[in-house]
Length: 342
Image 1 (cartoon, rainbow, N blue to C red):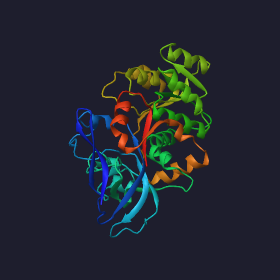
Image 2: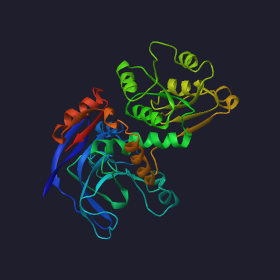
Image 3: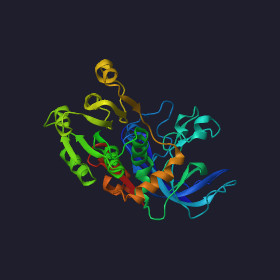
Image 4: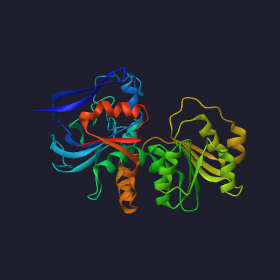
């Protein structure tokens, strides 16, 4: 039996190959894909490089945000059965170290990423360790589930660590899928949200998913506008999803004394002013990357209970056969969140 699967030979080329449907081994399951979301990090493979050192390009099926139905279980799998609806956790670890046992598999010294180091979800089927499967609530659709494996889960975990609540005015910089997810989560937690971006269409989506205020950094001084909204006090917390050095500095500048700041957008280098921005305000700054696997049940329950409009983050859906066009449009930023659906 064969299936279709996407491969990136490099230089923005996309190949859809007919390959054998894999067989699950010890402790593994076969998942028939129903949704697989495209992420900006996939573009590194698309261009022939990788965001992870040591990952060979062109050899593996991309897609680290998948959801589907288990159709076959390997030996030794007791927790899941055929027909179970699941999302897939992207990090595969050794299973024995303290990080793996705590659920933070991405910190394992043997960390491998699905869709980079092993075959991912841009295919009709994929084999994954059963311990990487996350059960879905009956009422959760596959598109929501796929997007929740990264954008929603990451922003939920960050705001949980920041103790965001109805007492807070939270500023979120960068209204791509991560920032949009952050807005709806913050509103679910009761916060007042200020959304910042340079594109009006992204800010319109931010309003749709709950932002109380929007600021276009092209048109106004962001720090002055936040100061005006907060009546000179500054925000309680800020999250940067953009990775822009300007936004990272604005995030540090805009919070009040004892404020909290989280950096989520990837950034190789930024110059800051520790005395002015950190020390004299006694703020807390954290980096936040993904979430521990056992937290997905809580994340999924929050999405369902708060009726978060996760699918509004998705601007385009594609069939797998349309992969070449899907990745071209995503690379050219003609889409926001895009998802392959079956």
